[in-house]
Length: 299
Image 1: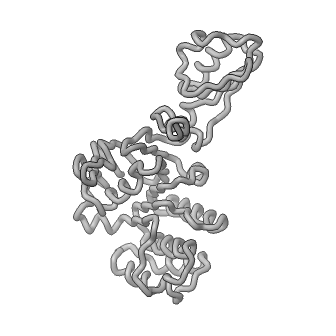
Image 2: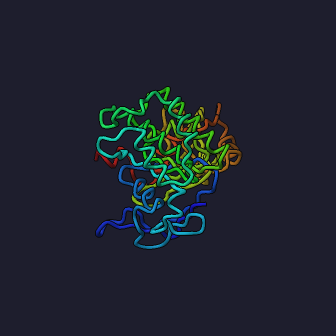
Image 3: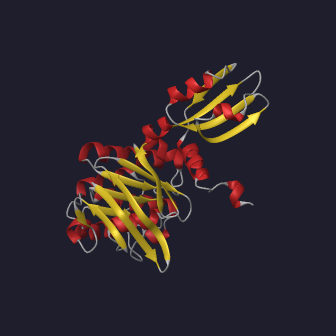
């Protein structure tokens, strides 16, 4: 299990992470989303033990990863820009990681070389961005980590390889109990893959929960009226966003769906319905509440 307690990480006077608290249970695929500069990459590096903390703690399996080689051998962090030795090929990098990670599996590596269309003897420097990403993912999965930390995992991958990666991640969760944390701006990809999601903004956790719970807590409601009721009639509803077009009102409301619809129906609409929001819509709604929206950015 990974647990952050009052976690703070600063660069000079700037707090990239500010009193962060969250928990990630074993065997989950956790999607880490957020605005630009929200602290996603910094958080992954702190979990991996690349950065030390300036306050609070990050605990993995009851221990700190900082200066803990044994624990780090169970964690693989793949940065948004993969690193390889200059002039190295895939086989040479695999030999290196086999010496670094005690759970490195040659059997797994050989299988992945048959899955990904890469040559083990070609120099990685000469590969395209997408091919380098594939090489990095092959090496990461071959180490058989307990915790796999991926920063923009799908960046540069074509649709077929993205599907392959998803299948491999799900297979790793099912067979080994691996936990994956994926930081990405591609919310559509995460929505298909993750069971838990955390949203960071300005170094703080806006929410961290089961994806289905998040969806169940926010509702898109459309209602049409012969005569639109005055705003006071909607008091008691936690309305995040509302738009009116004549007698049609579209709202984003936080709360229990049954209670929301009971309130809406008490206003005698011609019709009223709820629609389940996407992860991208939840992301936008929550950040609008935090004041991060296009109106404020372009003002």
